[in-house]
Figure 1 (cartoon, helix red, strand yellow):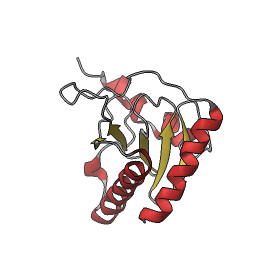
Figure 2: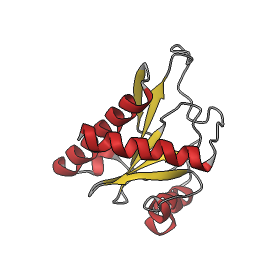
Figure 3: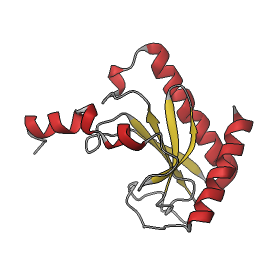
Amino acid sequence: MWWSDAEWAALIDPEACGMCADAHLDENAHSVLVVSTSTAHVRLVRNQAHPGYCVVILREHLTDMTDLGPAARAAFWSDVQRTGSAVASVFCPRKVDYLVMGHRMPHLHCHVFPQHDQDDPLRNVDISDGPVVLATGELEEWARRLRAAWSSVG
């Protein structure tokens, strides 16, 4: 059963949105900041069960892709594509998947989810695989490499 009206109202409230609160921070409980654009924050997820897994979070609190106008939609997808290109250049996955869901965290964001040789291509994608938590220094080094790749793929 879907969220009740009260539960959904609480989830979509920008004042209570966890992504609004911490997507811009250098570090939060879930990820580290790779780069911010005028449209989005690109974050390297702490759970690196799929090396290079990032999230692109829209700066503005909107809950659905249909809420974006044409220019903002193009800018958001450009950031998503550029993130995928950076991930591909640093981590050399077999495929990069792009997931936009938001029914549990209704703030528009896209999971940039690399698939590697060891991943089963017939298994459904599961963003909760793992966890594989890297040491802080290693995670920051991966973020540094992604920043460098972001600059070169732009």
